[in-house]
Image (cartoon, rainbow, N blue to C red; front, side, top):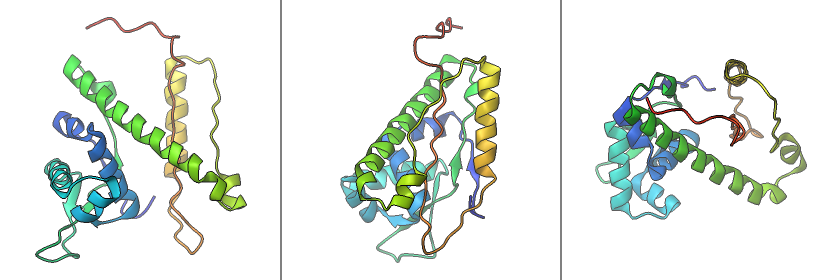
Amino acid sequence: MTDESTAVTPGLAGLRALSHSTRLRILSHLRIEGPATATTLAARFGLNSGATSYHLRQLAEHGFIVEDEARGNARDRWWRAAHQETRTRSADARTQEERDVADAYWHAAAVLYAENIRAAMEERPLLPPAWRDASTVSDWVYTVPAARAAEVVARMKDLLMSYDDEPGETAVPFAFQIQAFPVPGHVEPARGE
């Protein structure tokens, strides 16, 4: 992670705002690629500038992005991510509305991650051997109780967070996606509370 690595844990309204796939894409882009204007983002995501500006205002209203005052002029506003990581308090959700909003965010994130891995696989044939060898699409399935699964995920997060960015001529942003979940169809659905 970089020295600027910070995290945000949004409340219900912020999480609801991030549950929109376009906003999540924009925020992810700003975190990885750095500051951009509404015009640049509109072109990148195939949106009109009005829609892009609306999504940027929503992200700014909830504190996910801020205006980059070191760039731009009266005509062009530049935006940058205010944090490098979004965390959720899904385990703290007490009401059905809170669970629904958390689930909507998780769904939007999963769709974004699926799009990222699809794009990476399309680009894979063009990669030099060193980057092809460094990449993986793997899964390992173990039978464990929920507490052990949570422990393993926490340890993987701790391991990844222990590394720092290593900028350099041959360095690139490299995504680690942790996808951890019960194999569908193996857990009894929760009863309404």
